[in-house]
Length: 333
Image 1 (cartoon, rainbow, N blue to C red):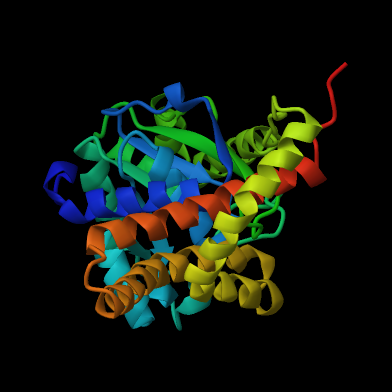
Image 2 (spheres, rainbow, N blue to C red):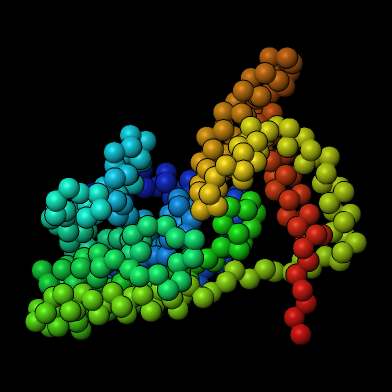
């Protein structure tokens, strides 16, 4: 498996994830990042309620790019297969997707190699996306990978429970929080695994479920605006003309967001909006810049693009300010 420093695609995906969550979410609260060492072989075991949104949040805030594990059924889709290869994703063959007994020999070997090299893995141990991850039963994959790697000589393997919660999963400019829990060391469980592998896997899976439930209780906290209600209202009025121009300039992306709210299940709304926005905004800027500069050659392209970007920032500021006006945070006593 290629080392991270050699994978240009990892750097591109990190940049995309950081941009996407900064635009889509107003604030992402990060707690416990110190629990994730950069060199220790680590498995990030995360709750899964928000499709690609969960992946983007992890990639954006984790100290290094992890290798995700994804069900082999996703690899049948051409677009997913291309993305997975860029991201170093490993396929998992599930019993539900196989005619006979699934064979994950290559997957376990790849995981062992990655952990032995000090890499990080990321897995959603519930197996599928849930509306509410709290209290859900887990698959045994994370425990089997961790204990199996330790059994073949990979030292200091740890599982870090990761809870990701959203104020509103599909709502643009809402808040989110990610909580990295205390690492679960695997080495002390190795003797039990050698004596009774199934029992040790079951115990570790139960402990991981309790740890995930604990980190999943964190809720994103909203920060009250320091401006007075009157100043917020004035700011909203001042921003409205520029935001109106920005709304027209970014109409294709905004329209996709409206459609996604109507036709997509909540857990997929953020994914559709972020991916569509990532694709549509550069195309829209290019088309509008070409159109405007052809209409008036005196307009330099960089200035047009800068104006389009400023109008997009005005839209974000207007949405945030409107929320401060309409949904003020209750004062703490």
